[in-house]
Image 1: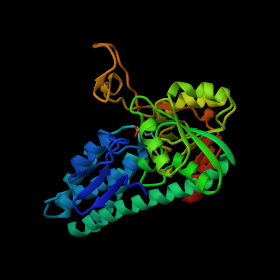
Image 2: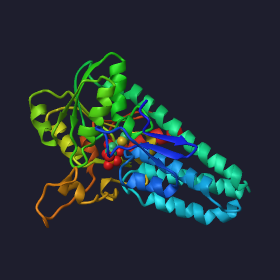
Image 3: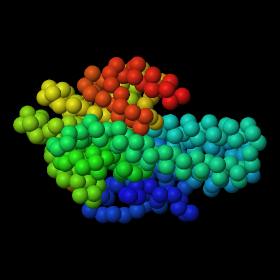
Image 4: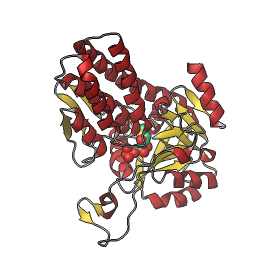
Length: 349
Ligand code: MRU
């Protein structure tokens, strides 16, 4: 299993995704501020991995606290949560994870739990989220594998793999599960400008698993689809609104429109922690604007003339009408998503 993030006695160890695929190096975050920095600078990225990293960041902040009591730790706890919440606004798993920790903290505080016990329980909760994330990915894989053809090519955008989760992946988990069940799948990985998660990360991860992969530039998908070379698209998600509108890496919307035009199924795979029923539709999803240097420069080399205008939204929203199905660990949902999501929430309790 790829060690995307690992809890150690010294802090949280991240596989540095800014350096892949050429260097396999690790960054050790020894306090919660360093965890926040690792999330903001994309040493660790991908919505589920961001959520669990924040949980470990909170655990690290609690373990390192010098407060004399749980009551005295309370303002510090709020500060830790606020710092981690300020890192990446679109991935709702971040806020889901922080809210879960806040509920735990409130329960522990009201039941008079001493700080030392509290620290153990907060860390145990982070470990639970880590384990749940892997089992959710495996369950998504089991549900989603049936949707892919017995033999054919699947296009994916960005990296929604083991590197974006605690292991196995969401979109790439569906592909992995299909391959494990004997399906012969060739993956086309969009390079995913500007951060190149497809060219650098998806390609690296799938090659390590021996899954045949071809990297294409983002502007090549239409012509491959027209040539009949793509049988399905599967992507991940950063936030799914109540009506099924889905925020994912910038460029996903383009792919969804192309898939519809060519009659190719377009699947989204995401854990339940990515579903945000409090956000009614895609227009209400906050979209992160990333530093302009990600567009103007590559590997330290300037690509654009000085002073040119730049915009760098990290995500776009795919309206639910383009989505053939949403694969979650609870099962496969079909439109109308507003009803499907509500019903599945009720069934799961
Ligand atoms: O900016 P990133 O690399 O964090 O964006 C990642 C994505 O868009 C993924 O598709 C999404 O988070 C799902 S990861 C399982």
